[in-house]
Amino acid sequence: MIAPGAAVPSVTPPAVPVAAALGCRLWESLPALLAANLVFLAWCAPYGLLALLGFPGLALAVLPLTVGPGTVGLVTAVARIVRSERARPAALDLQRGRTGAVLAAALLLAWHAQLAALHAVMAHPESAAAIGLWAAQVALLVLGAMVAVHALPLVGLHGQGAREATRNGFVLAARHPGPTAAILVTAIAAGMLAWSLAGAPLIILPAAVAMLGVASTERLARHGGPTP
Image (cartoon, rainbow, N blue to C red; front, side, top):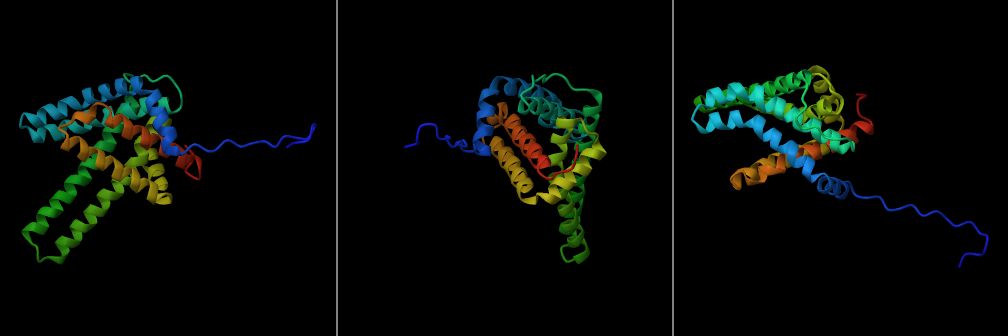
């Protein structure tokens, strides 16, 4: 028992795990997330429609102009939700849209560079130079994807341009390779899940992955990351 008049020791409430807190925020913001996700899917519709109609070249040409800005718009809306601000999923300023297009084009270029190198390996499997070139292109693609894990949220959180977001994304990925790789693997797994279920999870999955990326990037940047 505590004697009368004695000071009552303060009790520190237990810390809420990051995953649990993120899940609670996702559930509380579900209507806004669904709205933002639908806008993102609308941005992606031209690419998907052209691909389904059998125009892969044209689909790839419009991908940076549609999927890139759509992704930044989704991340921006999610960033407002994470910061407990009012989400405006339809609002996407020109600068952020242009940044999204540039980042998407860079990733698309890296992807096709490694595909070209892979074709060279298949044509000349005995060539050590071709194998080395393909390995270098794959490493560059993985590095670009890990940088994009943080670069896209930085655009949504702070409105950074392509160069600044890429630089800061690289710093965060280099300082925190484990969490960055975990987010990237989660995003790839989410894409595989959507593919295996004929796209049904796309109704909420992109927004959920975006929330994971935004919350993780904000937390890592706050603890030893680059100054926005």
